[in-house]
Amino acid sequence: MGKLNRAAVLAASQESMTPPHEVSESQSLARVIKSEGNNLYTCELPNKKTITVELEQRFRNAIFIRRGGYVLVDLASADERPRSTGVVGEIINIVRDEKVWRKKAYWPSKFVKNTSGWDDDSESNAGEMPPSDSESEGTDARP
Image (cartoon, rainbow, N blue to C red; front, side):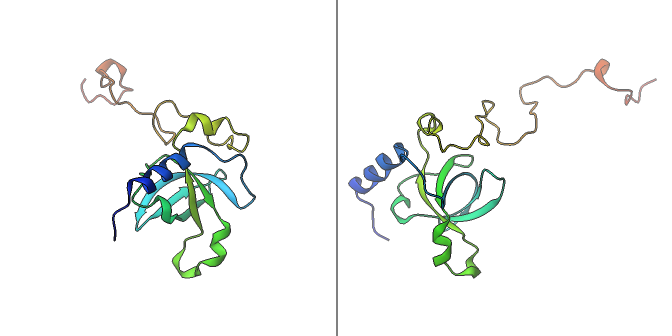
């Protein structure tokens, strides 16, 4: 595998900073759930369907995709792939400047901004004091 030149990395970075003006029917925004390795990612579509997609060649080894981040996927490329792989699309763009992307009309309302930093709906008790004995609900073994 050869080294990427600086111009290729810069071009991929600049391209992912600006969102497209419009998206086609076969394209959709998705939230990255997990990296599967070998440039494969498990993503969640706005309708909560989980899919496996492949990272486009120009972004490989140039852009880091974090878990919980957003990507633009093209599901039309699934017709060209063998069914045995389970890959149903390709990541064609990576959301890096989320504020700009959220202003676009095609941003799904299902992807609400989560200010807590947690991806799941469970509440965290990190940074809180443990419950005192007076707050227990009768589970205390003392008389």
